[in-house]
Amino acid sequence: MKIAFEMSEDSISSRLKSIQNRVSETCQRIGRDSNAVKVIAVSKTKPNEAILEALSAGQIDFGENKMQELQTKMGEIHSPEVQWHMIGTLQTNKIRHIAHRVNWIHSVGKAKYLNEIEKRAAIHNRIINVLIQVNISGEDQKSGCEISELEHILNHARQFEHIRIKGLMGMATFTDDLEQIRMEFRTLKKASDQHQHLNEGNVDLKELSMGMSGDFEVAIEEGSTMIRVGSSIFGARNYA
Ligand SMILES: *Cc1c(COP(=O)(O)O)cnc(C)c1O
Image (cartoon, rainbow, N blue to C red; front, side, top):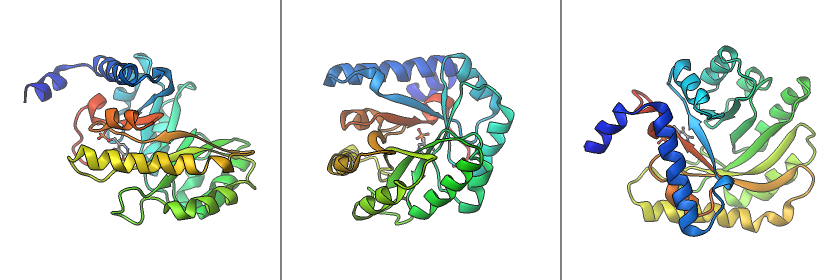
């Protein structure tokens, strides 16, 4: 467990550098432009000091998976350059608490959430970037829509002036089997490719949010443009 020990000795800034290096190396190896892969630092359960440390190291995209925690952190960290990403399960009645500041919502798996995001973004005269979460693991029916529902959701989104649909998000099965994970990422990429003809107006499927600490290199190989990395930057969490 030498690696884990070294990790715990490292600063957030050096871990961020190491993630960026791994992103660059992976991109170089497969001939992708490393600027096309954005690192989202998943700061859930971590204190504001950790976010500020990452921020001063040049990290500007931060992800949270709980609406309440995101709301609190957005209220306490006043740096205007921060891009906040909501990446976890949504609750309709809490969207109004984040709509004034959140920049991206990755986890929209149902058309009904779009109605509420539009309503709340309009009140603040803002535009919110949205990714449609697709169930690629086949495990938990609640984590994202089925591929067969995508067309309906994208068409539903067209009427909304304060929403931009920027791409798809997926969570792979929680497993050590990287080949299974690769196949699931490939499924998301294929779903994106197969819906490109629907791009028009506020629908532009360009981003693929996939890959976490344990599998982001595989995700990049399969076309990810946004990796959501938590523990490899901030260290292990005590709870999910
Ligand atoms: C926690 C979380 C991550 C980051 O997980 P790590 O394994 O710590 O990198 C990514 N995406 C979502 C939706 C998460 O909840």
